[in-house]
Length: 460
Image (cartoon, rainbow, N blue to C red; front, side, top):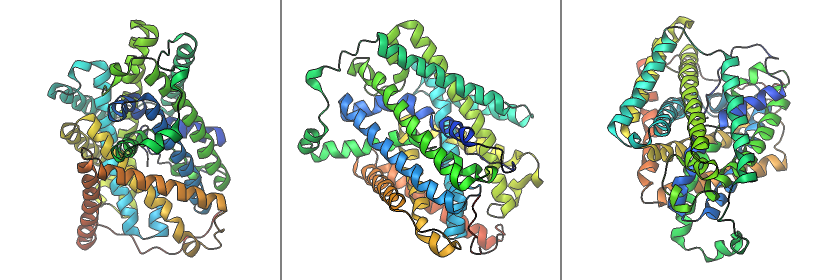
């Protein structure tokens, strides 16, 4: 499940993706809205740039462990489908339906709303939290929906070029900041001492720490993007896990460097609670011209994300309808998924008006973490459901335990943090609503899948 780019649905033949193509795909899906917005909110919650960086480190460990755990799943089921596939085949179709439901409600819908709101926030900061800002974000979604419905779209090459240019410019920004920036907060007398901080931290500080993990973890989701195209990879059981691990480590290092600039270049009060932290940091490093360039980078990045997700999301629902796990209405007889497109756009526009950007980030972070946790838990069923499935290696088991432990901390932290507790219940409500929809559609005969047979182990 990912959020910043797009979940990938493909009908390509095996051999379409090589190792570096998969690495690029994962990187593109990870680097999205969250990295441009999270640290300002974390500074408000934690009050210290070093603690903010600690959260980025912990969530980086979570993502790397998750990449290894998802790689373990991909080794055993090296075909396209992601959480929907893993949970349908290894647990039960109803649980797979839940993964698809979460994808529709959170993975795409909220991500589209989040990217649209972030785009407007960087383009017109004074309108970010206003009704007019929400209206502009909704208008952006409506406009892009119309463009897609008319048959016009970016080619894969264009989207890849946008991602490459974005990453090159952000890397150049980091290099420029490290060479010429004034990191006045990084005083040697104030070096990071995580062990002492841990020993002296109060319960409220710990709750704030784990509570802020939900929206920072959101920036790392997307590490699993390669599992959605496993069927288009020759040797998927080897290449898909390797690509996810390599890409996630690269992005983690990149995030730590980028956020070190975001939190140490400006004065703490300049970014505390602010959404457009990337532009504020750029202003501190290079003045107006660099801040303007950063705003442009973020706007292009978030608009292209909206475009990509409005293309990819409806295709996931179309495939689910063809498989019989969504109403046939959304199959569009195998043609362009127009019905699913308008459903996706309509729900996304409603979500834009439902909450502020931080609230959406909190909800999306904890919901996607919970769904990812379910997918990794499905490893417990792999030995029974997949013929000749290899036993988990110790490092695979350890990675799954680390991922699930940090996921549990994210979920518990969301519940314990008073301001975030409604997002915890919203997450539970999303799962409960999915169960109700599944039961209704199943009873009504709208879902036509058969009970699954044990999948065969495939080597890719």
